[in-house]
Image (cartoon, rainbow, N blue to C red; front, top):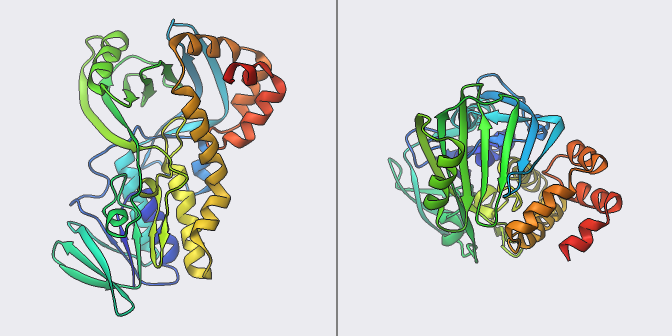
Length: 357
């Protein structure tokens, strides 16, 4: 039996693929899949290459991006592939239903406590109706503070940013997402419709202060529908993600873009490599690193440089990308794959290299 801890997109996608060949049980600590919501819920159009996009979880499509510098200057991009705004809870439920249709089982209200090896089996202690189970394979898809990672000695060193957002009644362009760059935080306005938006920030510290300030400036007295928040892991290229028959995937493995802090697509791609490794007897570490490791590493290097920027640096950066040739490159390539984008940008605009140095 393959036990998957966590019913988010990474765990559910792995379950859906592996259940075609083996018995899979998903353990979810909450009573409802998809809650609490701890994600902005916007992805690139690349998601459609991984799973069918359904109306039940697709809230909006956005084809334009506006990036603001701290001085209020901005640059607009028309995306070749529209971004997708998801109802994240509905998306998670859809992913789990897909896994169940393929033969997986789901047990909610089961919290992972610890695991250990006994006579060739993985013994898992749980808090729930089942207190102890035996498994052949254990998959930790249980988020940034993964208890599976801790229990198996793969937690390692981790850094986090915190994202805080609110769903608000706000008149916005439903086809335009905003990103606000700042030395202290990254802000966003993601439209659900012309009258509802998700407004938030991510930061290493003082999140509530920056969030309140950003809300006052961008939203004013708009009605708040709900608040959401969550920890986002920074990709650690040195983290071990496989130990015997125990695997980590998604946020539990820090499979997150350090540039924009999105991880839905990266976690699902890693889940596909996990399924391939399990069914074909291959190395999971080698497979996921070959597929997404280079882009995650490059995103980390970009983030480390961005973390040194002052507001003046961000002002200059936004001015530099107003060049039409540069804009076309950014519009064409999804931000999930910076390795395809960076070389093109440097060839087109060598000043970027001097600016980064």
